[in-house]
Structure formats: structure tokens, C-alpha cells
Image (cartoon, rainbow, N blue to C red):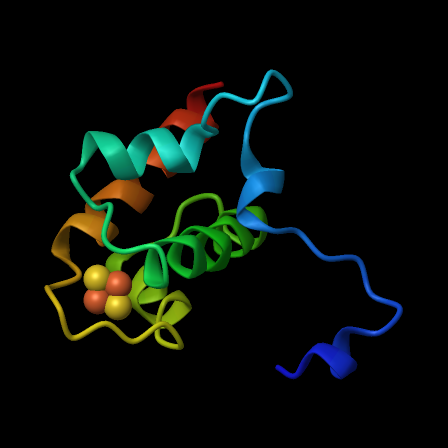
Length: 96
Ligand code: FES
């Protein structure tokens, strides 16, 4: 979306997904745990997109996860670890 389309909306950035003490949040930890961290362009987008997914669907299947990150294209590597990271985060959020 263009920035002007967000005028008047509330925005959450990657920094907004950290814990209150500034340490990485559940999704960020899960991305590290699953070795899903990629570059500084796509990883924040993947994490913010999947945060929105988990807010709407706490138990997404692989198809839902891949659909949620469909707007974040990366041809540098695969998406397997990203899907695993989201599944790890989803499980941790459900058990919290
Ligand atoms: S690793 Fe980020 S765009 Fe490919």
C-alpha cells in the first residue's frame, strides 16, 4: 500500500513487535530459532505479515502461512524455515 493510503490508520512496525523491554518478541525469536532470518528488506515484512496472520488465525496451516507471506517476495532462498518459524510462534502463543 502507498503511505498516503495509511493516513489516519494505526501502524505497527517491526520495532513494535518487540517485548516492552526491547528484546525480540515471540515471532522474532521463532525466526531466529528456525533460522528463518533473511535480509533486512524481507524479514521485517515477513514478520509483520505473519503477526497479522496470527492475530486473525492462531492456528494457521502451511497454506495459510504461505498465503500470508505471498506479498513478500524473496528469490534469495526458500520459504521452508519461515513457515516453520511461524508454526513455532503460533504454538508458543497458544501455550502462553
Ligand atoms: S533475503 Fe531478503 S529479499 Fe531475499
